[in-house]
Image (cartoon, rainbow, N blue to C red; front, top):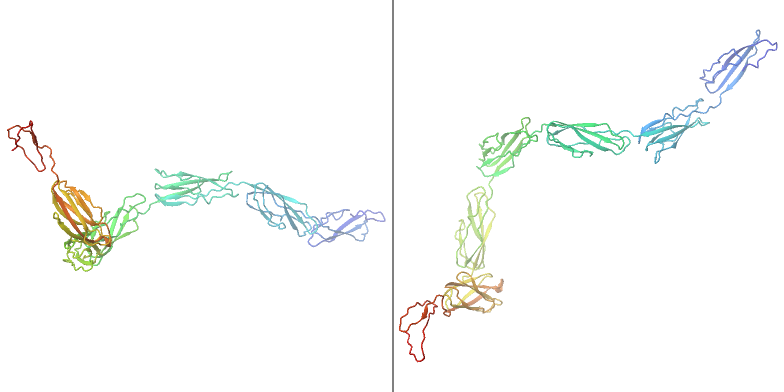
Length: 598
C-alpha cells in the first residue's frame, strides 16, 4: 500500500514497485508494479521485501521498502476416500494426502470414532501414514485423522469403511479321468467365502452318458461320490451359499477311459511228475466288461522238458509236467484294445511224503495172533510204498516179535498181558512218512467152558479185563453161579454177569467178594455166558478168582393145549406126553367101587 507517499509540491505521483528479496524457491511476482496497491502471493515461507519509488513527473523519490514475513499456517488432514470392503478383509488407511502450506513435516494421529457392535478391530499403528485394521464385523468403521506440522493441529477429518457381504466362490475341483465302474469322489472343499462365512453345498449331475443311472451319494456334502457306470463324460455342477448369497455355478468334468484288463493265471500248483496240469485263466477280468482273448506261454521249464500247451489261446489250456522242477507259465489277456500286464503261475513238481496208517487199535487174548494192517497208508503222488514196522513198547518180560516187519500186514502174538505199541513208517522210494502207531492190548487167556458143579479158576491180569465162560442149559433149568477170591488181594472184587443165549442180561452180582447168583430160571435152551470182571481200575483191579456153575431141572408145568378129559369105564384112551406136560383125565365112581387104571 503506497498511498501514504506524498509530494510537497502537490504534484501527482506515479508508482514503481519491485520485489527486491524473496525466499529461495519463491516465484512470487507483483501483480501490477505501477498501481498504488499491487499484490503478490507469498508462495514460500520466509521474508519478502518490496521496494517503492514514486515520481512527481520530474524527480524520483528515494526508494522505500516494506518487509512481509510469512506466519505458520495450520496443516490440512486428508484421511483418504471412504471404502466398502468385504468382512474380515484387511483395510489400509491412507493419510498421505494431508498437506501443510508451510511445507513443515507432518505427524499423524489416527483413532476410531466408531465401530460396529462386537468389533475388536484395532489400528496397526496410530501414528503411521498408512495404518491397517481388519474389518471384522458388518457395519461402518469411522476413523479420524489429525495431522500436526510441529506447531499446530489440523482440523480433524474422518474416513468411513463399510463392510458388505460378498458372494462366495464355488470350486468343484479339478477335472478327472477314471475307469468305468470306478467310484468318483467330488471335492468342493476349495470353495471359499471372502467373509469366511460357513458354506452349504448343492451338487448336481448336469450331464451323464446315455444309459447311465449314476446318482450323487449326497448332493449337499462337501465331497459326494457317484459310480461312473457307463463309458463317457459326466459333468457335475456345484453352487455354494454363505447363508445369504449363492455363488456362481462351477463344474467339474469326469471322463472315463478304457481300463486295461487284468490277467489272472490262477494259483500256483504242486503236482506229481507226469501229471496233466490244467491252467485256469477264468478269473481274468475287464472293468469295462469287454470280452477277453487269452495268450499263454511258457517263460521257463525244467531242463529236458518237452512240455507244450494244448491250446495257448483258450481259457484253460493243459500240459504234462514231464520233468521234475518248476514250470512258469505267463498269461496276457486283451480286451480288444489293450493288453493286460502279464501274470504268471508256477507249477512245481515234487515228491510229497506218504502217510502211514497203522490201522485201528485191537484187543486180543494172550497167545492169540493180532493181525496188523498198514494197507490204509497212502502216497499223494501214487508212488509204491515200502513198510517198516517195529515194536516200540511191550509189557515187561515180553519176547513177542513181528512176523514180518516189512510187509503191509505183519502179525503179532502177545506172550504177556498188557499193551504193545507198534509203529509203522512207510516210504515212497524217496521220503519217509511221519510215524503212525497202533496199540494191541493183550488180555489174560482165562475163560472157557463151565462144567456143572465143577470148581474153575481164573485171573484178572489187567484193569478192564473181562473173562467169558460158557455152558449150556435147558428151558426152565435153575442156574446158580458162585465166585470168590482164591487169595485175599487187597480190594480185588470180581463181579459176574449171566447172559441168556440171545445176549440179554439175566443177573448181575453185587461186586462183593464171594458173590452169588442163584435161582435163575433158564428162559430158553441154549448156550449161556458168564462174564467175569473187576470193579476196580488200578492195582486192586487184578487177582485170582474161583468160579462154580450149577444148573438143575426146574418144576414141570402144564403146557397150553394139554390132552386129557373124561374116562369111560372099560374104554381105551390115547394121548401124548411132551416134556413138561401133564395130562388130566377124570371119571366118576361111587363109594365101594373097585378102581383100576392101566
